[in-house]
Image 1: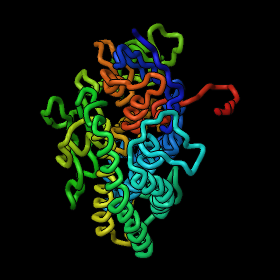
Image 2: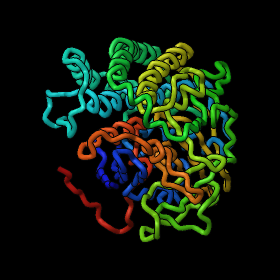
Image 3: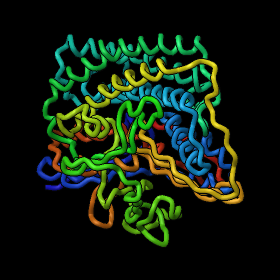
Length: 468
């Protein structure tokens, strides 16, 4: 007998999303991930001064705002033919690293741990399922780490603010490098905060994720999806250091190839958008919203690489870089997030050791009448791309494909589901009245639906809706 399960909103993610799942004989046979809010940032950017993009696009999200400042700055540098100062590149990548750390620590403890660890100290954390398997002593220890992680995650944002002025929505990352020089005092301060974070990751975070994995072994067998992996590259192409993490790569059926950006297409067959073509290059057109479109079910579009859906994020990066070879599943994805937090601290140590205080950190730039560019960067949740065009010294076009758009896309005209949708297919559901498996698999991707979608309705007052 078929049974439909609708979860709306899916809790403990960034933003709002709905998941519709069909279960047959206690296994998932169909799934639709739905982004129910419209993002109008691309339309908002048209007609504005190009440099506004660095600050405006950060407001897409309060969680991964530094990521958008990075992608926007790279797109403008490509358009203006600017090579950033090497010291400026070090500093803004340290800012970007801080966001990685803040997010990975927060997502693991505040969003993932409550799926597996019973936290009794707060009634707000009462769970709607009873599948808790950790021994009491282990459960209590990790529950305490849940609270210990809060000031540690905050310290990562404090580091970001030391160089970027504030967090979120920093003022440091800009075209050509960063807006402020480093000082010896700032470097020492950053190094001190980083040592505290490293100690937390080594002593608590990594042991905790392996402890959880030990008691939930079936999660190594579910939530895998297609197995196609993609990265735009991370902390690579330094003039003096080379690559500290990963060059742009893709992997299909265990065959790793060099990434080719010309193979990216965006599809809108099942998204609430209309355009002259339902498949287009990212720099070709901006589709218009149409929530009455037949068969469509989400504001999230469907990016494809060489015609196929690809997973992006920490697990993709670790596998493509050769730092992880265990598998692709919900639990592998969760472990990868903790391991990548450690990797990011190592990159930060290297970058901090290269900082020369109080020297130029920003290349000069001049705004042309017309230009176009793209900024592709791997960020916390995966591959983030900004494409822009300049006409009469103003933005005439802007396109953004976020990591969660890759992972939480709709299906497409070839019948391919989105990556997260495919990851749910075949999942055994022990109790359809309490389908904990669905939330655990979806959260393993760290969805940021406030990036993938957004609310914008011209001329209407913003409403606040209280959700109990």
